Image (cartoon, rainbow, N blue to C red; front, side, top):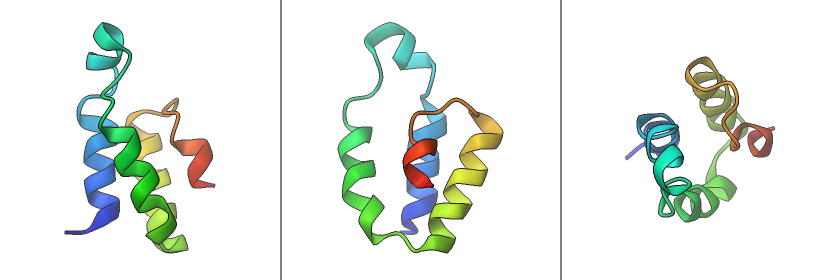
Length: 65
């Protein structure tokens, strides 16, 4: 498994849909927090750039800087 790709899927597949109905997918935030310290700068950059193309207002973007 490639962690940045997994997080990209979690950041984009459901963002906006479940967020409107329930406030977001509660299981995605702990996964993000668990994997974040293990991402290299290159992986963070890829995830930040890729996610911003699909959802430029995603809350994870600021924490990937």
